[in-house]
Amino acid sequence: EDQVTQSPEALRLQEGESSSLNCSYTVSGLRGLFWYRQDPGKGPEFLFTLYSAGEEKEKERLKATLTKKESFLHITAPKPEDSATYLCAVQDGSNTGKLIFGQGTTLQVKP
Amino acid sequence: NAGVTQTPKFQVLKTGQSMTLQCAQDMNHNSMYWYRQDPGMGLRLIYYSASEGTTDKGEVPNGYNVSRLNKREFSLRLESAAPSQTSVYFCASSEYGVANTIYFGEGSWLTVV
Image (cartoon, rainbow over all chains, first blue to last red; front, top):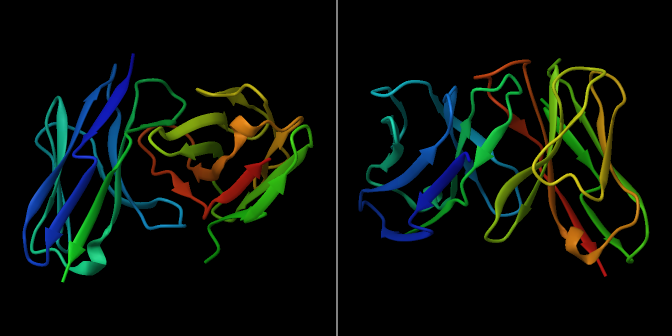
């Protein structure tokens, strides 16, 4: 069964304190691994797609990496505005395009 | 710059009542999806439509029906609402096929009492 597990569930950081969020997955025929950001009361906002092991993508203070079993979202020198829930999702080998989501990591960055 | 638009934003229903959540996208996407989000459960797929004229069940379809009205619109209907359907519902869309980014609407908060 396809599965996505994110850790930790919650993370509190001081402004400027770098850290990483983990996304472990088991899926038959990975087509893509997606990272989304979700603010309270809002829909998920797309951040990155990774397609193959070894791939990395960056956006401002965020950097996503992918191995054959997991993905990391590295946050460098975070700011309070980075506070949000970060969702990881995988797309399986079917042709449907649908996503299987993890439960998310809620990040709080204190000034 | 509307993207994916859902209505209503908030709704309170009594057990047994019916209602339809509406969704429209202006990105000319072929595929559309309905997810629900519950605390501790993550986002779970209810139904999806890979292309106009087709619909398929997702992970949690029981108690729901969908209609792909045209390429732009995909509605979700609760025929007889139950308290277990209290949730936040998200509509989403993407280009047809795999490895395409799925874009989400802002959500519809539904409470069944």
